[in-house]
Length: 167
Image 1 (cartoon, rainbow, N blue to C red):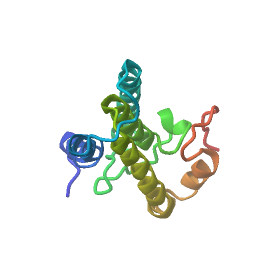
Image 2 (cartoon, one colour):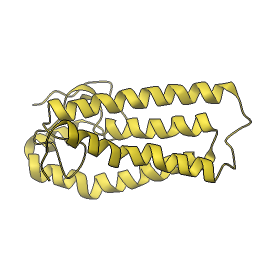
Image 3 (cartoon, helix red, strand yellow):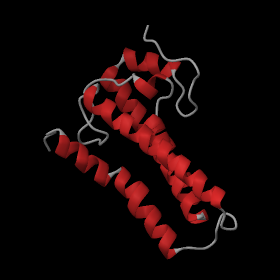
């Protein structure tokens, strides 16, 4: 497959996060509506909207950085050709996944759905395993010492208060 810019990004977004935050939560919520998180309350809707907004903004920033700085997409079949260590990547190694998980949490709160919340936990667990045993090893091989320095200096999931500065 050839990376042809906009179409590659659109395909990557539809196939990966589109399914994870669109199709799966929709299916889970509408086919398994019970049990709920709490009695229906406006704070669940507001909290859901806040998480959704944060997640969408974080996701879009990361996709933009992958395109502009990394010269690639979020998909493994059109990977970045450059190491992305700017924007939110200066504070945490996986801000895109944090954005996706925030969207799923937002959906769980907005829909008042425990099953969607459980999907968020499962999605996080799958990504934790994938990053630990596959993605990080691929990045170490592809980018070498710069990635190893970055990996050593920047936390995987909990953002640092101090931005990363390459040595």
